[in-house]
Amino acid sequence: MRLLNPTWYIEDVCSIDLDYLKNQGVKVLMFDLDNTIVKPYSSDLEKEVYDFLLEASKKFDVYIISNNKDARVSKVAKTVNASYLASTRKPFTKRLKRFLLSKNALNESSLLVGDQLLTDIWCANKLKIRSILVEPLENRDLVITRLNRFIDKRIRSRAIKRGLYKKL
Image (tube, rainbow, N blue to C red; front, side):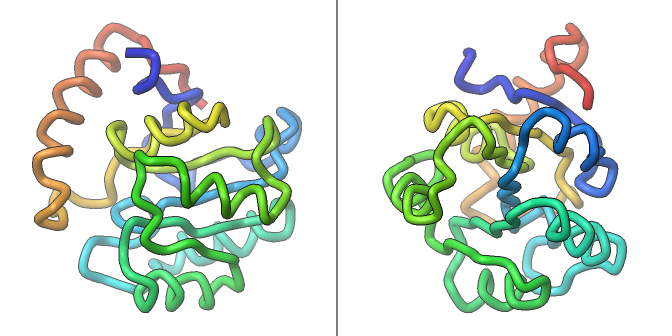
């Protein structure tokens, strides 16, 4: 199950210690969209998340990545002046790998932040990049995500109870 183990675990995106990541050699931060930085069915960033992403973009190259459609992802990315990749098809790596290679960012200095083990964390581990698992912003999910979330909750709760995730 190593493919489903994040490098770090933290409750929410805004609690991420950017200076710590900088000291760990991170240069590129990729954020999943749905339920990581915006609520499902919304394209609006909460003010706290917006401010966090602006602060992150001062210290890192920030990318928004999502399995969602271009129109939705681009709207959020433009809000914080970030590059983005829509229709990523995580956990498959082909599109994201090509994107990262085009940005010269497929290396140990990249990190993916996401709320799902079966897409975000699995994808990061297959690409051999670091990851941060966060709790979903809300319990409501896109229809396509519900089965993944059911499996995710079982794995995540056991791992947290056993202390298998390293807190950031």
